[in-house]
Image (cartoon, rainbow, N blue to C red; front, side, top):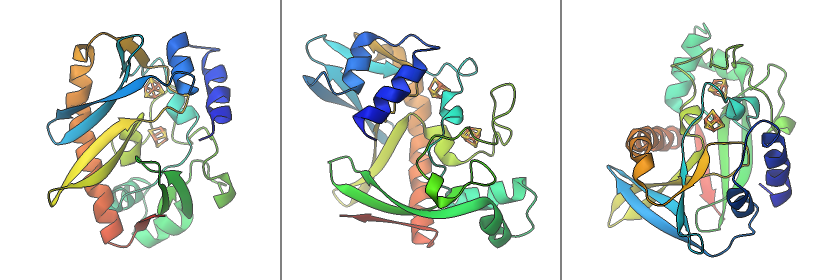
Length: 234
Ligand code: SF4
Ligand code: SF4
C-alpha cells in the first residue's frame, strides 16, 4: 500500500475517530526512530513497534461493534481450503466447485514481505460484492456480508483472514521447525492503535490472537499444499 493510499484512508478514518498524531505520523513514515520488540506468546512471535524517542509501544484494541471499518473497507478476502468447504456450505452450495465458480475470484498479486522482498501470491478470494471482478482486487469495497448492526452475517463461519486483521503473519524456518511471526498491518483503516509504556494492556489480545494467527497460518499452509493457492518469493 502506498503512503498516499494510507494517508487517504487516515483522512477518512479521522472523520469519525480520533487518531493520535504520533501514530498518524508513524503510519505515514514520518517517524523513523523505531525499534521492533519481539514477544513470543505461545506459538507466535509478535513484532511490536517501539518508538524510541517517545519511549512508547504501539498497541492495539478492537472497537467493534462501534467500529466495523475493516469490513466497510475490505481489500481482499483470500480463502483457505477449510474456508472453501465451510463457507460454501454456509451459502447452501451442494459442492465446492460450484461455490468457487459463482462466489470467488482467483487472483494473482504481489505484496512486500516481512524483510522487504516481493511476494507473489495466487489465492481464491471470496467476492466482496456479487459483481466483483479481478480488476477490483485490492480496492476498498464494503463487504456484502456486513449486516445492518455492523456484524458479519456469516459469523462464526467467516473467512479466517477476517479474524486476523489488523495483523499480518508469516512463517519462518527456525532450526527446521516452522515458526509463526506476526506484526500489525497499518492500512490507515483501523482506529484501534494507541501508545503505551508497556505491553501489559494488550496481554489478553496477544493471548487470543496467538491462537487465531497460529491456526490461520497452518490452514493457509495446508491450502497451498493442497493446490488451492501459491506463494513465491521474488
Ligand atoms: S479491527 Fe480495527 S477496523 Fe476492524 S473493527 Fe476492530 S477497531 Fe475497527
Ligand atoms: S466476510 Fe464478514 S468479517 Fe469478513 S469482511 Fe465481510 S462482513 Fe467482515
